[in-house]
Length: 508
Ligand code: MFK
Image 1 (cartoon, helix red, strand yellow):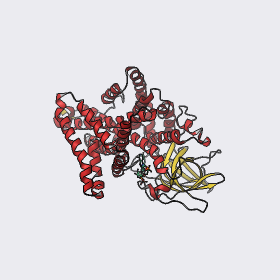
Image 2 (cartoon, rainbow, N blue to C red):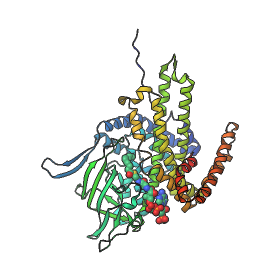
Image 3 (cartoon, rainbow, N blue to C red):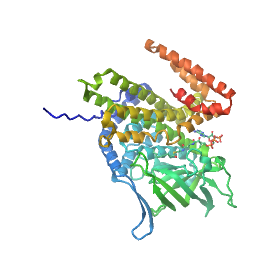
Image 4 (cartoon, rainbow, N blue to C red):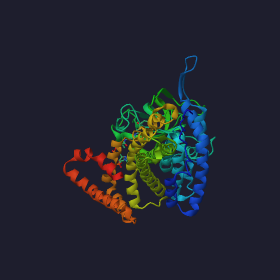
């Protein structure tokens, strides 16, 4: 009798086999732009499936290493990353994964093209998507606030396609006092020798080998006094190395030993007078860094959906290869029902995230209406928080569809779940973002335009098979409209206590 060996799952082409993405693009883009974008994505999909995937695996196999001292005892503070990780930086530049958004070849629709590339790149890139997200956010901040002469080269470097000149930027916000409540930030900025110098410790700095970073600090006056709380924070741009290639008075304390994202260096570090340039007004740091956060949160949502797609694509392929009880899994109604649920969830999240991407494009090109801007203000936290929860659930279920193989490291599957867990945490937890939805409603009156936009979509439902679902969604919209005034009658604690359920329902 022949011994049985199971066929492993095979990944279909990341672009041509993704019917949901292709249909979304066909709806979002006019024919001439669609043709160009499809050509680029098909070619890039080949590169992702081959070169990028191989580099991603190599980068995972050779995680970063901190060399604190040289052999003679001098501080070195060198984070060594793999050759593969460095190659991923070059490919990101060549492919214009950040640049596309600033070249704007298709006007506001350029963001859809760019985020489609992020979506294809992310699951094979060992999370090189993380430095790119922060680089994109930093570029946007520089575009809006970076008019100082000292910054003339910075935006060009973050948005170039030239791998020799391309820089990435970190976002150093979290301190020991808190990642959510940044009002406790202890880092100070002193004006010395005609410029600002930063002193303080940052507790999570991802992509720590970046050439630049955006960070928050409290400006000291001449007597060393600062303003407490988040109103005392200002936004700074810094370059990590001086002209001689040495770290600019930065001490790397250690690398984080993380659950996932293991190819990505995330460090604790102390600045001992690092030179920095003030962006925006003193004291408006939180408001200013929100430009960056709102963009990295869209990246987070897109990468969450990309991870879901990867897990579901593998599980669906495996279902056609794996037999049990005399039939392949894809001929078993309960298994098919389970996979269909994951597919629906993934498609819903795809539309949620790309709707945010489309609105970002309109905002940046000045073609957004007032209502678009209000919807975007709500949609960013909603897309981030909802997809961040979904990806953990979907990936977990997809792993279960492999049985024991989903729990075995060298199948490559458990890594998907470890990496997925960062999405609900990174760039704002579910609760922080639920409260941000309340902030958007209170400060930008965003709820009415958001619900109107849902209403308009429901009014366009013409397929009779969807009438019941549309009626249920309309009923939910009414209930959500009523929820806030009713909860407010019960007081602040009732509003804040219900914010997560409210936000999840709005997103769904
Ligand atoms: C990829 C792999 C990564 C590997 C591992 C990483 C592990 C995770 C590491 C981390 O720590 S990630 C954590 C990242 N941190 C965040 O995402 C911050 C989360 N916290 C928030 O977002 C809080 O809501 C916030 C810091 C903004 C609260 O600060 P405040 O000062 O209490 O808020 P306040 O006073 O309401 O807002 C100040 C101003 O900013 C207001 O404007 P005005 O001054 O004009 O009134 C707000 O309207 C504005 N603002 C706040 N959030 C905004 C915003 N404006 C636009 N969009 C927003 N999202």
